[in-house]
Image 1: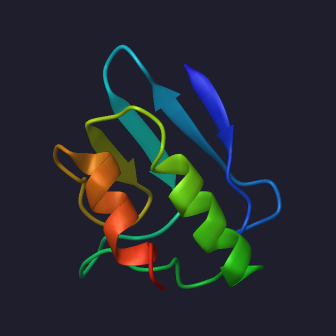
Image 2: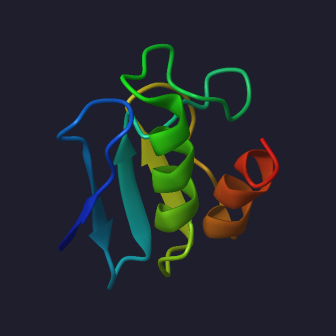
Length: 86
């Protein structure tokens, strides 16, 4: 398990990357309740965007969130797309 520091939602927010399983445990990095969007609360939205895009560079095929549905493969690309030009 690898810890990825992803501030934005909160100063100490992290994601967990399960490399062998190809899964990102994203927590509140963003939400996927009615499509991918920023978490309802963010201490720093610009920093949250940077963290989302940085997390999307890691190798994973699925992502799970604290709020909403999991992302299927290729989850890293699905995660990156809505935030790349936001």
